[in-house]
Length: 335
Image 1: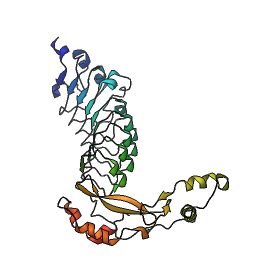
Image 2: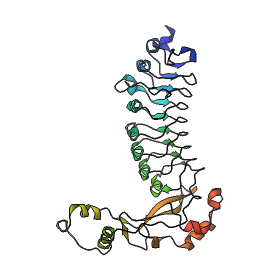
Image 3: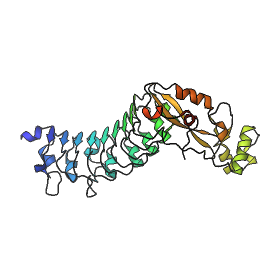
Image 4: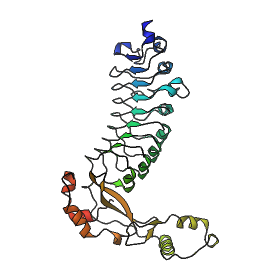
């Protein structure tokens, strides 16, 4: 039978079942199928018929109606041959409001595209796809990024553009394989300092974010509690103590002290700190605002150095950065 030897198949809308799913006999007709393209067919569900394709490594189902009625991905994926064979899955241009939980059973997946859907969030369980190298989630309604996304050791390309993301977790600095990070057209006002640890990053897209133009003018600082003041005194003055001197909760509290990054300060902080933006050259191509934390308002960057930084902007600086006055470069705080 000619169909049996086919390894690549492009289906048209006429192949779909009355419910808008794959034809029931697909697995028996094409037992050697490796690549299936059902893009733009009006596909409304991916059911158990998909599980019969034991050798499938690429599934393209772009621009369809998947997710419209809820269960649009087979729940029985875990333990099926498909969970071991599928490497590339493209579900962009559909109507998913959440990442189908059963999709996270595709543990050997290397490329996942869910762009231009209606996703509201990224599930923390995304970390289960540890072989993922390419993740495209652009063009959704995502507002936050879970720190668990950093547990994808093989990730090279991460696309989060055209969402509503307001901040990036510092844990993303653990993505040591990351080469391209697309964050344009979001609501970012700063980047975590830890992003400088992405030493292999070759592409960083930030256009269309507030970043350097949406700042809070007034300094907001919550005074330290009495416990924090006592803890700071103990740490700064090196007051000696042993474990038997203090309750366990206070010992743990003292171990949480963070050093103020101002080299002229030498102070520490616990819960009460000043969030401040520092403009840093990144990858030799960008000047980006990175968040760092100071122990008090008095530790802000001197005006003179900020003014020099503002006056020495290169032609590669963005238009938004070029119009930021020196006084705002001195102290850029987020409320």
